[in-house]
Length: 350
Image 1: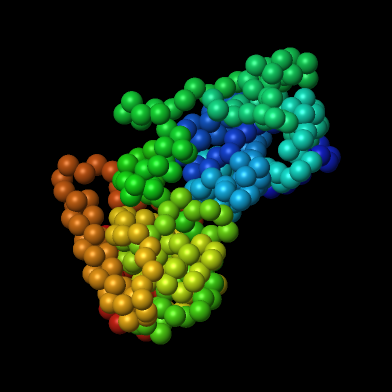
Image 2: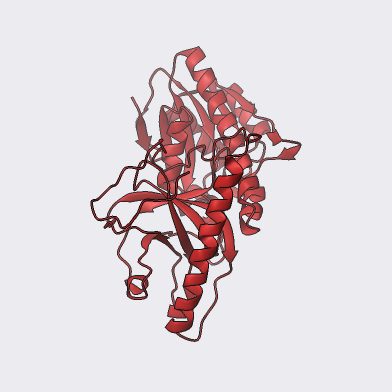
């Protein structure tokens, strides 16, 4: 039975023991998948649950609140992705002042031994834990000998000679290299969330948007050609703005997706926005009229970029699926299904 827990201390969750993997898991890339699936395989061999442990907020966000590193994956998507990799239970541990000062030895004693009854613990090559990042694989193995568990480290994962890391993926996304980033992720990069009400300025300007809040520092900023998942059986073509909206003096990051030829109310619905191509950076315009003119250009460029992607995917040499599904999305099928009755036209077909 799946279980989600958030505390380091408390009663034993797995009396028969568990196999644990620990990491930031930001991005849920192919390296993370390798780590989790190795832990899952070991858990199956031992007949115990596989437990994936991460932290919220991430330690680097906690220690640098004024200038946190860009976040790839929010907590909900991370939890769903870890379950998708095969974990039986997920620990999304609260990283707070107390945990930041906890000695590595105490974390092992309280969390890995007392809470999880770990029989094996697996980490990635860069993972550190405990106060001042004092815990590494050497210390973990030493503590494992004391407490009766095996500790292991998964080697870095490479693709076509390139080491896979969240840092590299952030760089690629920032440069608009979405196909390359998708290769390292093992799927297209997408952001999911529940559609919230905005100021409805886009509707006033003729470009209504489905808005997703992003409460962390995003790895992206600008205008993008996108597909929206979760509104029909197939991804829906769209153009999206991601950032702080300088023309209207926005502050918090907001992802705004305008779905082409779409009339349905999406408030409260969970969707995912898949990024295909960057069109331009965010700009501050002199007024709403200039902004509207640029939005029209953005929409046309997005349609062209999405059409070009579809043409490329239809080439005989293409072997990969256009969407190894992003975390948080609906699976595409052969025919589009209308989520509501008042469409003005059908979506582009992928």
